Length: 117
Image (cartoon, rainbow, N blue to C red; front, side, top):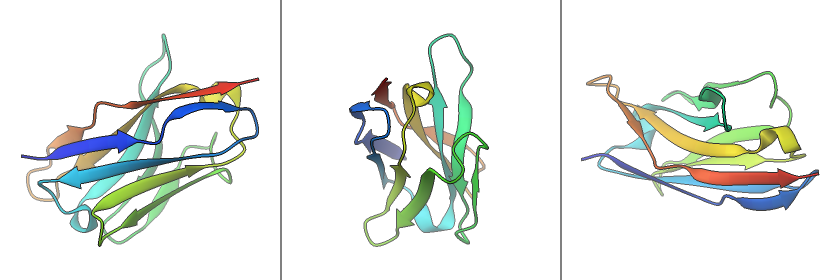
C-alpha cells in the first residue's frame, strides 16, 4: 500500500524559506511521476511543481524562480524548496504520486504553510 507523508510546513514571514519533504513507502519515487499541489481556503487544488521519473520538472508560473522540486532516490523522498515566500503561497501543500504501472494517483494528508506579511 502506497503511503505519502509530508512534513516541513509551518509559519514563516514573507521573504522566508521552507523545505517540504514527502516520504514515500510502498512505491519507488524514482520510477513514478510525483508532484506538489496546494489548496488555499475557497480555492481549487492546483499544481505547484512536478517531477518525472526522468527528473524533468515543471512549475506553476507563480512559483517559477522561487521553488525547486527534487527527490532523493536513496531516501525515497521528494522535496520542495520554497524561497522568497509570499503571503499568497499560504495553503495546505499536498504530495502526489502517480503510479507508472496502474496510473492511480496517491495523495498525502497535506502540510500547512502559512506566510505572514
